[in-house]
Length: 149
Image (tube, rainbow, N blue to C red; front, top):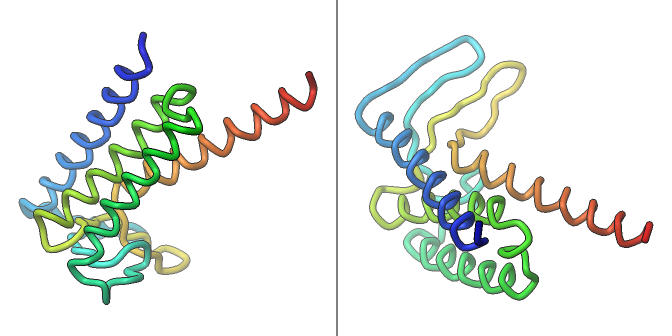
C-alpha cells in the first residue's frame, strides 16, 4: 500500500470523525457528569485559549503553520516513513482549522473537572497529542536502532 493512500485515508478519517462529533454538539447534545462534562465551547485561541487576541489572524497563522509543517515532514521523510501518524496529525489540524474558517472558533466539548479543572478540548486535540507522541516514539526507536547497529 502506497504511503499516499495511507496518509490521505488517515487524514480524511480523522477529519470526518472529528467533524461528525462536533456536529453532534452543534446540534445540541450535552452531558454533565460529576467529573466529566460534554459541553459546547468555541475556542478562539489555541491550547488553553492562548493567542485569542489574534482573532481572525490566528486562522491564517495556523494555515501557514500547517503548510510549513507539511513541507518539513516531506523533507524529513516523515510522510513516507510514518504516513498514518502524519495523516492523523494533519487531519486533526485541518479539522480545527476548518472550524476557524467556518465557525465562531474551534469547537471544543470535553471538559474534565474531577480532581482539577482542565481546559475544554476535542477529539482532534487528542489526536494531535497522540500523533506527536507516536512520532517522538518512532524517532527514539529509530535512534536506538541506529546506535545499536
